[in-house]
Image: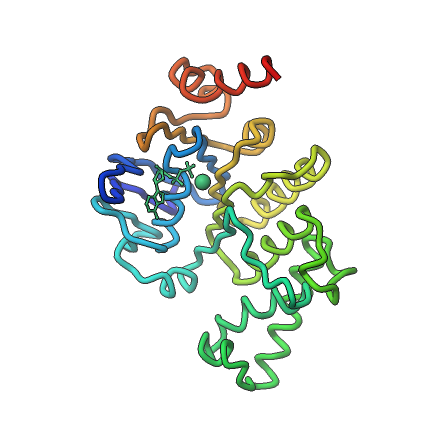
Length: 260
Ligand code: ADP
Ligand code: MG
């Protein structure tokens, strides 16, 4: 077993709010690791630190035996960490294909400034970007609508587009923040099959998700946060039967369903 990502004693404070407190865990290569917990538990904050949106207040984050917690975000993607966001970040007036291509433009030798200024890049680079983007759209089964404006897509298809864009950067570790939020039953099932397909490519996955059927079905390991602290870690079965987890999170769900 080799650890791909190691989170060591990480604390994050926003003024008086402690969003994460002394959190420690690791993510194994080639596995799907889930992060669950009630709203405000600190899940997105943890994702933001792993993807270097901001640094931890205390503690360390290691990726492939390299300490990354003080890296700026532009140094993270080239290491092989890519993510989707809880709030979709798609360019609505660009086509589906352009959305994937623009993500890759920032990764070529011409770099992010050239992409932002839409400067010409070499024919070879352009060909590579085009071919890779089309391949990714095939993988998520959006190639039929690659010329459609992204603003016209349903939520389910927008999430697939975000996934294609994250995949295009050849990540070793993919972070999905609530990628199934708002999806119907069928779309959720398709999304979970797609995530398994990505794992089978050898890509490690770290996923925040509220849909417990999805989480329990696909995760190899689950970490549970409550009020910023890790309260449990284990296989789906272990976590599901953990009294602390039931009290803090899973039990509350059942009550809501029962009273609905
Ligand atoms: P989750 O994703 O589990 O719902 P978050 O990580 O978004 O939880 O939030 C954890 C806590 O940290 C919340 O109290 C939230 O208000 C606070 N928080 C998150 N991000 C920020 C921020 N950028 N500035 C201030 N407080 C924040
Ligand atoms: Mg969140």
